Length: 571
Ligand code: ATP
Ligand code: MG
Image (cartoon, rainbow, N blue to C red; front, side, top):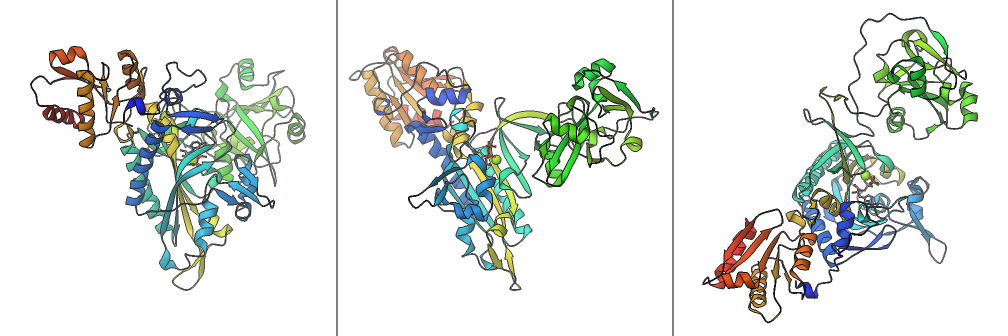
């Protein structure tokens, strides 16, 4: 490609409205332009990189035995009503209607559509298993679209769906696709972890996310380097503390804590560490209230509570009037003792003795509370968020915490969609059974900012090999018609003929502009030909990753120079 002819509008100034380096650089390098919030144009170089990511994903999906299809973006509401997700999906779904007032969604995901497609076709166990995938746009009306194509409202996803006659078959495909994902993210050059994840809106029993490590990422993960345990912190488990050594159980005592409404204030007033206090949260459910308890310095993880109880109707009581009606006190003084509701306590505080809780009387707390004596009906389970210093639930080694970007997620869905949509097959004994399903997504658009977030410097992008938009840049520091330009032009043709993808910077621009653009767009190698070099009989080869070489051209046949450059590109 000749730069002078390429639609590559690089910007001199850093865009001020972008926060993340990847967003800034994609705008600055002329890859994307914003149309409206969360909706972007891809310009030729941005689109070229997108296609490269897409191709790596496609190759690995095909290699894993998946078959490519293309499903509609416009999806009838009735299908979503069948799965009961028309309402459940909420405001993230773009909804529209046609001239006859029929309702539709712009597909945020395709479980309904694909299950509808196969339910009439896969009628026998002999048709299973089957895995289909597509690479297609998705539409989600994100509350906060941000960071450019990292979280946009229209984005490209690879989504695959598998259909099975047994749990073993589902697990086998799930493992195969896990391996395919590992190959995809390795080939793309990402530094990534696969972590246990909540299933969220997709539902199902088991799920893992693929997280590209990045300090600015929106996900937080806990990882054990010793045994390989890895989980999203929303569900990560920990090894509970050992029982406190033999401690004498003291007498329960009500103490005044006037106006002390927070853990810190109560701890300070009673002169105890915050962790000596147990916090109480009250939840309402369709079947009444319940209490959840965690340590004073801990954070209750609602995802854990709802998955432990297997219910999605939990709502934390958050108004003064309701909390008073349930406990008889205001928020600052609530506690578990004397409440006639189920009590769930975090497993880590089971070891505590003589601790403090609210007294359910305004301005009072209870001291020297003990489980066996005062709260014998409390049930213990993992309820709090993991934190720095926690130990691995499997091996007890210390957990490490990282931030990252979710680039993919895989789910064992089970029968959720096949049951809802009446999608059955006939097993060996002639019995009708719902298929077991899996689904598997990769955020193709999001992979690009993830790669950049891991590979950039103050000058611009440093692409990984699999997605670099060009193999090499040829920078000529003289005008058209000069020997310098002519030599560059020759090398451009020669390298193109040899199968490389060079960008020839033939623009009438200063060397400074050309070098800046080369670094900004991330040319992995620059061949620099200038009048001085020409006179000395040499050209310079500079690597984006660092390092330089000088190639002699004086008295060397041009073909040999091209060979030498080819060697440098292949090394
Ligand atoms: P997130 O939690 O980031 O909103 P998700 O869990 O809702 O994502 P999935 O339904 O698992 O997303 O979709 C599969 C993949 O699509 C995600 O792993 C992510 O890489 C990508 N993705 C999801 N939402 C967006 C978005 N708004 N913009 C770009 N990529 C996205
Ligand atoms: Mg996800």
